Length: 369
Image (cartoon, rainbow, N blue to C red; front, side, top):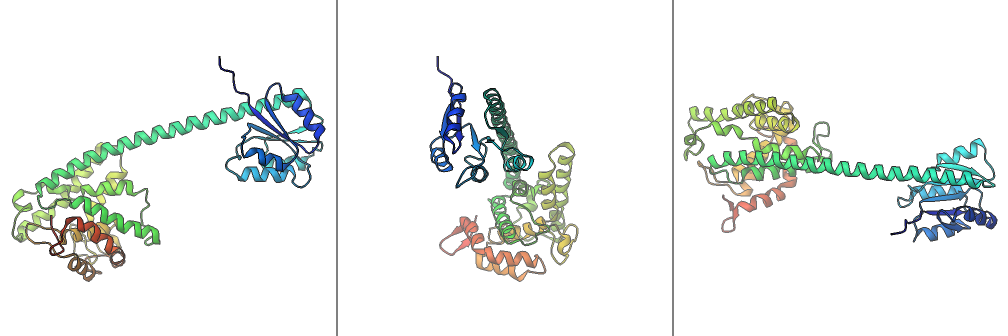
């Protein structure tokens, strides 16, 4: 049978008599290190981590109070229980020691029975704290793992729906993937530089926002193939039908919200679906929103969506170069797009080009699907 490993106590006192007495009281129950100074304590701590420290208060060079300050400031030792042992116990002295992080005070001369019982109690409490931390850590891990599974399933379903939309709109290719990357580039810059701090998103929000972008054209499911893939410019009547995909998409997302409990993801999905065709000057659709009345996510998506449309093949057009596409975005500042976001676009344009380059041919630097 394996022998149970004994717990380790470090007893620190500049008085050798006290060290001998304390060690003799405890050596039958614990592995005891009797140390005459702070210097010896820290030397041993480099190789041995005790379960508890008995620490004299009044010592030359470095007092017990000074020692505990160092211990509590070091993450390696901060959780080790410290019991002060002292011949002088008064209210203020004890209060200071407990304020610095000590778990208890023991008076000299030692009472073997009392000393052992206090050590036993504090080691038991510490053991319970360690077990509780392990339990909490395991519980947190289980929750994170379960949450990840839910996110993965959610993203798989949403990705499948968006694939269906893209399959019908045969020229959009990797449009959804690229627009997600474009939005992330803009948001990362905003967060880093504190732009629109009163309405911007956090990196945690992006867990919901990026997947929600996949549903921005969900309503195209209701648009006929003849209009979606028409090789010529749409007639005014056909364009009105095409514009209807926004409202249709919002209706579907709202119905999903009524039937499900997860509202955060769908909240962002509804915003991006409803507002990514709005324009800064109010001439967009379907609601004619203007300026900052357009939700930030819609303003961000407008730039990402248009840039990708410009640099990609569509039934009615060949792709523009990345240079011409950027020029159109910049020239539309204050009319189609939020001027502040266009300024950010100019800063991250090289990264936009890098994303778009996955869709380019080297012969003429024109992006194609």
